[in-house]
Length: 436
Image (cartoon, rainbow, N blue to C red; front, side):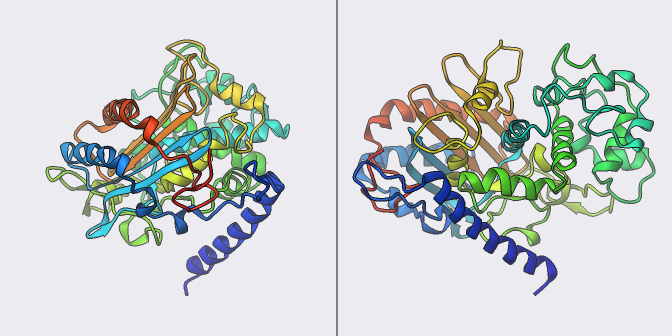
C-alpha cells in the first residue's frame, strides 16, 4: 500500500473513532422522548435508495427524473430535512458509467465549501484565536509573513479584515481574471515552470492593486476564501483540511468529507464520475503541460481551491452539517447561538452573509456551488425544511442552474411536503424511523 493509501486508512479509522466520542459527548444519551438512546448512524454506509421508496413520493421521483432529463444530467442526489430530521435521501441516475447513484456517493460541492470554511472561522473566533475585525495583511495582520508584506504595493491591503473576506468585500475583483481559475495565465505571466502553491499565488496577487477600498463594496471572490483557508492554517497551526475535519466536520457527525483531488484516477473510493455536456470541448491542462483534458479533470486545479471550493461530500452528510449550524435544538450545534446569528444576519440585498450566499429576513437561507461537472444547492426554509441537491454533471446554464433547481424545490414542496414520512435517518435506517 502506498503512503497516501496508509494515511487515508489511518485518517478514516481516526475519524470514525473520534466521531463516536463526539457523538457521545454531544448527545449524552439523548433520546426521542421514548427513553431509548439515539445513536447516530454512518450515513454513507447505511442509507440506500430503497429506504426512501414510498408510494406517496413516486410523483416526486418522477419530477426529479424529468428535471434531470431536461438538463441532460447523468446523476443527482437529493436530501430533505425537517426540523433537523433527515426524512429523505436518494440518488438518481448514475454515479459512474453504469453504477447507480446512491445517498452514500460523495461529490464535489464547489462553493458550498465556503460555508464550511466560514464555520471554521467562527469556531476560531469563539476560541478567542482570532476576531472577525482582525486585519489580514501587514505587520499587525494575521498573514504577516515578511514575504507577503514585502510584496504589497497598495497599502489598502492593510485595511482588509477577516470579515471583509467572509463578505467578499476584500477589494479583489475579476479585472485580471479569477486567480483560482487562471493558473495557466499566471504561470505564463510570471514565467513559472509549475503551478503556484498557495504562498506563491498570494505573493503574485499582492503585487496588484486592489479593485476597491476594502469594506466599501463587494465582488464575489474565490481568492478571498483561499486567504481564509490560509488564515485557519496560520492561526490553528494545522493544515486547513485537518483542522476542518477535526474541529468542524467530526463534531457535526460528518466522517466522509475530504478535499477534492484533480483527476479521475485519484477519486475517493465512493466518489462519483463527473460528466460534461457532449459539446464541451477538451481544454489545455491547468499546469501548461500541453495535454488536452476534460475540463472537470485537469482543466483547473480543483485541489488548490481549498476552502473556496474543494470539498467533496455526500448529500446526507452535507445535510447533517447544515443541521449542526442552523440554530435549531434538535441536532446540537457546533457553533454558538451568537455565531449562528452572525452567519445568518441579514443586512440588505447587496451584502453577502457569512458563508451563505444569502440569508433573507424571512428565514430563507441559500448556499450554491458550481464547478465543471457539478452543481450544488442548499435551501433552508422558514418552516424548518431544508432541501439539498448536488449533481455530477455540467449544464449549459453554469452557475445559473441553481435558480432552476430552486424552482424545482418550490414545485416539489408544494406537492409533497405533507407527504414526507415522519422519521429521522440521522439516527435510524428503519423505514418508519423515529418521529421528527
